[in-house]
Length: 333
Image (cartoon, rainbow, N blue to C red; front, side):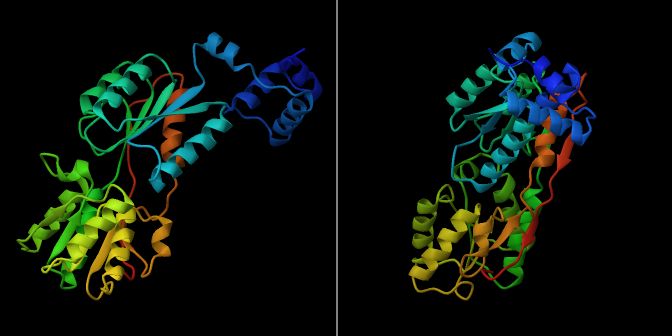
């Protein structure tokens, strides 16, 4: 027969309620030695909570959903997923992940979230697929949500913002201050082709305007390593090549360093290169990559916002936090 919570409680010498608090991951005051006795007893008996029965009883799925623009290849997304999984494990939740790399998938994601696939959602998207109206409509259903976005006008959910524009403008200003004048912006498709510039491209444009530099070199290519290498090779192989590249991702910037070296150019002598993201790989590129981004990648504060919402008796008021970004100058510029 399947062991019961009552048997675990008897073996550990505690109440059934204490067993429930410990194994559900709820934030209740349980002494460390008591918690360990419960865990040891559950392990000895081979007891696991009946998630299906619990979900029916509470009308909850015990799942949270991570919504990303695409799956794979983005180091910061991988760290966000890891931090979400770790906190979910500790609280007895599982994680499902949805990709919204098209308008159709964005609409489908909203529909399955409305349908109750998860008790809450952590949403980190770039581009225009998950529009503000879709997000606001989803939040209006009462679904606990945390949205990582610089989009204005989001209501009914917690919002996590990053000062991308200011930090990117600082990086491009550094390039201009060191004498660079033909600075190319290598962006991602959604940045380059949108009607109104935002984020990293807007920071580039503001810095160029502030320094009175008329020439703009704006191109795509930052979506993946191969495209970035090909784009940088084309830019740097031209007769009027740029003397600096500001790439919208560190992965693209590192590919640009490879392209420059393969063309026999020195970095930063012939061309300075700056990326965005501050990923660890930038510390082993040659030269080390100058970058814009957070000084450390730790998303526990963001993940905690979601679980605070899930475990609150009453929905808390919408909160907004700003995660600081900075320009980190290294050898490539």
